[in-house]
Length: 398
Ligand SMILES: Cc1ncc(COP(=O)(O)O)c(C=O)c1O
Image (tube, rainbow, N blue to C red; front, side, top):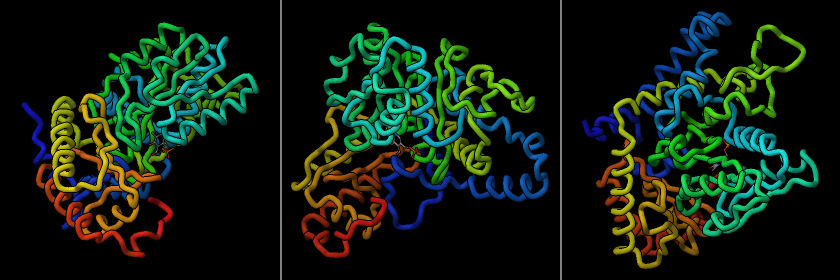
């Protein structure tokens, strides 16, 4: 049965009069989440107190929800676990990869990667010693730059600024051909595109849940370790909950079985409860339908904006196969334009120096919203409504 996107839309609470095109940054509130949070806080924490770890199954949430996410990213069940933030999961995946490729010293990434991934890689290299380095090349040069010096390729599948999508299977195949491992960051692709980590042969994949998976601000991240590495990868962040027997309280670390070893410390139970309810929205969703609908929405937006907004330059690849589920346009006064849009109820966001980003999330966005957003954007540009001092003062979060 094809996915019924009017049914998924009814599962979200969006404010009246708002066109929300920022689910690529923070997903909106699924209707079922407040009740699940109430249950977790009042019935579980409140009544069960510490017995909730066993009685309410809190301790198993990271792997149980990992299995729910596995379906959405084309991963094998039993090989995804939740916890920590994405930056931490990037560090874990990189550290394990470097340890598994001990004769090499280079992490290869691209200049379109999200800064936190690059910063984590830099920090890890500093800790490991002066022989280790992070090399970055332009996104279009990654394939050619993968050579025998590379220990691990670290790529974010969909570029957070431009929406450009890398070819996971092709880049991973080249990495493997030269003896390197591949770590994929799915922050902008999990729940947005037809991600296939098993088919693409990713060695590790990481991602966040507060964007397209709607777990709420600060929701936990996930990590995938390919089954072939599950008992080999050694966690650098060897916390007690990744130990084989946490409650034996041994003095020495022994990694837990498979994906369990990628756990670090106490799981964020309330955020996991929110994610659990948020994932219910996906139960009737076929990823192929989501991808088809996302392409339809992005195409309609590009066509509409290019016809009605002459001052904007498309920053996203025109070929749908080359992009994720967001569309970006450049404008020299992009920040002010976005503030003017938000003031009219169209919420996207801005990324320096000049990018207006719009995320298209078929679960709750349809063609009517696309048309509405184009109309308001065209009015703002035609009337220079953005050219006001209050739209030019930068807030802390853009
Ligand atoms: C591609 C990518 N990697 C890493 C991060 C950092 O994630 P976190 O703040 O959860 O550590 C983000 C945040 O948006 C991201 O988009």
